[in-house]
Picture 1 (cartoon, rainbow, N blue to C red):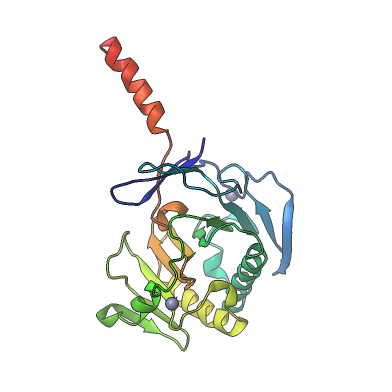
Picture 2 (cartoon, protein in one colour; picture 1 turned 30 degrees about the vertical axis):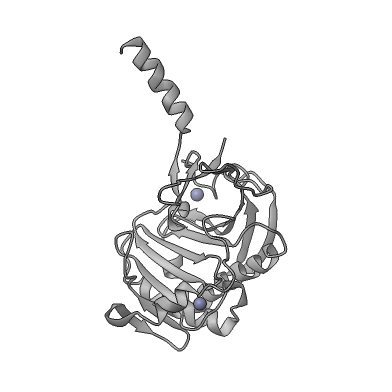
Length: 267
Ligand SMILES: [Zn+2]
Ligand SMILES: [Zn+2]
């Protein structure tokens, strides 16, 4: 069973769930939920049912809190093939794709899928975005200050590039190789972006993607304070780990059961 567990020491989450090995776009089974015209074809949206499921969210337990893994996942596919597609798109085309994602977020906001969003894309693989909405890891604390507003006001020597609306910087404490962040200079939620802002963002992305190595991961991230940012990493990074959630593919109870059997057999 897929389950979120809260580590009582670090207060970080672990997801007990197998990581899918097949390409989600090639392996999709559901009917399309929405489509938008793009280039000579369409961008199609499909929901993904085999990873996390919409359900009533409740962390239960005293010190050891857990919950059935819940949330929502869908993929937005603009290409039928694998390959380095986003890099070859124009700024206008990248802006269109970002606009479709914003439009979907506005639709999904009607449902209670959680405040934590990651939209991930692995460059040089299949041309699709994978959207995850979750109730963990963060929940809004009334009156708390926005962390990302603090970040963009304190980029100092880590600032790389700036436009009217965005700043590109290296985070204070990167978690992965090649980690850079493109963030709105003023507090802004992803779903509140207009096409002018998205065109600006697409321009920064286009310039940056030309300089990125193969196997780059792009992640649009928004958490409870609703100040989105785009993170880029070298290599393939798991969507959950972008949100700071560890993933293990076997339950701790299964692992201990197997180990108990081994210990009692003396093998
Ligand atoms: Zn594929
Ligand atoms: Zn902010």
